[in-house]
Image (cartoon, rainbow, N blue to C red; front, side):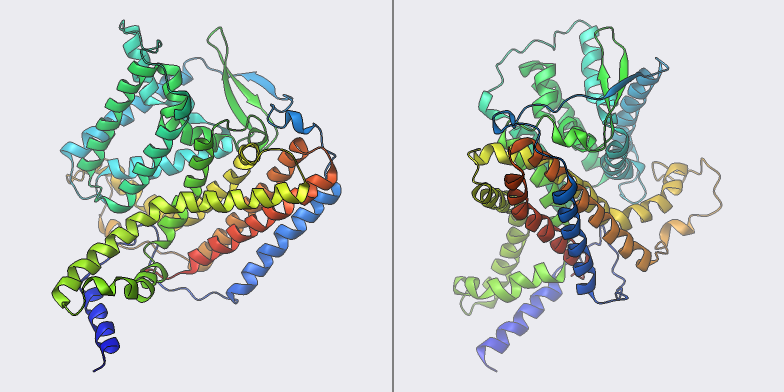
Length: 489
């Protein structure tokens, strides 16, 4: 047997020793597309190109000069008083109660994540459900933030948490929120998240929030450093409504044009741009890191690079290969946001050259950053769609036995359905994913065009600048659809 054949057999042996990977967000049942994949790609790309052409022909003229590119958009929104007055306090109390329940359930309930409600409550209802709802009806989290409510309770008890005891570093920007988000995704992908682990993580984060508020003041912490405030605030910019407080303590609904929140008030720090790209890239990495393609890329392409490390010592090879593979999977999550950022900057550099604009690359990156948010939400929903369907079917069983202790609060007949895979019509799921991704990219193309009308001073600059961004949107569309078709390892 030659050395190459022996090496391939040895790698196959190592793969056989690997623990089975869980299908966290997808199902392993194969689905054959009713028409060739390239036709889906062709149809989506053609739709984006037609959308770009229509916008270029029929959209209005530039409205401002380049000097005011970063300024706020004209405010044509209308305010409506939110009634009844008890609604917001009730929602805040409920949010605090759910946070306490989530922590409590992790310690007293079963440690099976599928049978303890706190896992579904946090990862599905809170992180996913509230985000999708916020994209439709505004940043509800800002109204119900349980950590902010706890801080306000401490203030009513006599603590001064509005005053900053340490000046927030100007260069720090939104880096804490970015690092917290990266840690959250790391926990989702690489940490065995039992209910107790989740509860401990929530307690640790609560302590960090209180310490951060005490150091930097309430307003600064929740504006720049807090993970969830920034996450839901960004997604809420898609909605045609925002919630505005008044000096008298009233809360008003401010209605605006769809996606108007993405055009005005661009980010002022590159760390917020990176956070948006991390929200996009982390979903893509979550979708690809457990696929046969990503696994085979290491074992078939990087293996020859690592071979000099072990020589002919097979025992040493097993340890090094498995350790290297685990590092490879984790490093990918850290690299993806910066890879997406580099591609984004390359597209903007091309836009700057084609438009012959004097606007700095950093200003362009900030101006067009929010135009990516429709893609972020659309691809996130498409990626988690099957997971959401499964969890929706299991939710009633979790509600009847929230701690997994054998209760039956709702009087359901049997638990058999909880143990069965949900019946999924994969054709409907696939076409829903395609439509959602396409709609998200169309919205991003339209928003980017509106931003360009405000950033550039001539129609020629607007059209020229959008060509590289159109190619970027097309690349995102093709990549998103391709990843969804990849079989899991």
